[in-house]
Image 1 (spheres, helix red, strand yellow):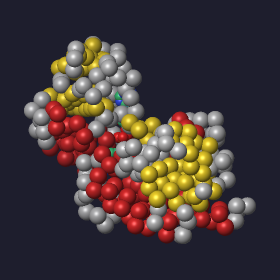
Image 2: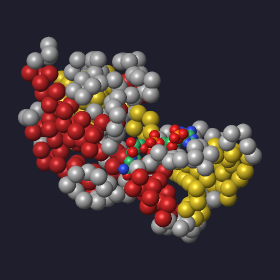
Image 3: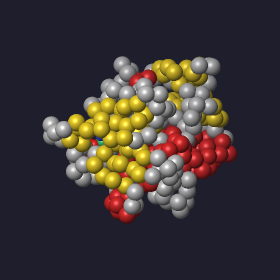
Image 4: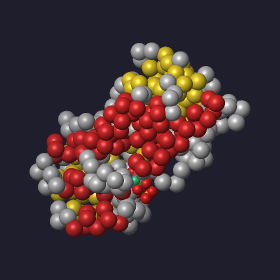
Length: 302
Ligand code: NAP
């Protein structure tokens, strides 16, 4: 029996682990089988205070080490079933029980849901330039999306690929300005505005994509060897379905205290309803959730 069961091995989960263990609570962090969360696959994290520009996996590893040093137990297991009211989590190996539960399972890349996307997954379709960009050295690739992720992915790819096409369904990006300016300076990046991707094309591997000019214009094909999808994220809340009410986007409703509708259950990081999803806000949530869990254990009525 743990005092605090933490589901999630990203910034929120690790910060919660550090704070809970330092509060003297028996703490278990289930990190999933790919620890580090979104941080773990980010090429660089430039805006986490005090760290300078760090590569994402290094920051993730440092946080993991700090949680362990603080006294949290860490297991590289993925939750397959969560019972919020019983503070119980099942993985493929074991079932764990706690007296409180911090859900910090993060968010995953959204799919375009067009023909060819799943079929060519790992054979030309990717959601991670830092992981897969090197496979496309000297080749032409497409990035789909118009937020900071799309711009960041395109920048990463511009260093290794021959040409990078950025396809966006609007006529302007909504990415961070500093990132956008850097991308505009890259000579091998071409922007395709007001286009909707309709299919990923290929035989054994990707050979291109089909898109339509908006509104209702011609269908065209763009030859390329890789398609990087950067169309935002969706919260990993499938395991919570039916146990508490989620918001319209599938996020867990909780305010700045991270308390959810279920007493003793806290939502931290990108799974929580919030205005800004960044490593620094996820870490902050983790700290708050752990201290709220400690308070709950002292007085469950409050
Ligand atoms: P986002 O800001 O939600 O942007 C998603 C983009 O994908 C939007 O441009 C959206 O188009 C487009 N999109 C969504 N569904 C699509 C579809 N089916 N087909 C085509 N396009 C689609 O997500 P994000 O870029 O992943 O960023 C998430 C958060 O992380 C943001 O807060 C961001 O600032 C942060 N972030 C920061 C950095 C950094 O270096 N500081 C890097 C990455 C992410 P519409 O505009 O038409 O909706």
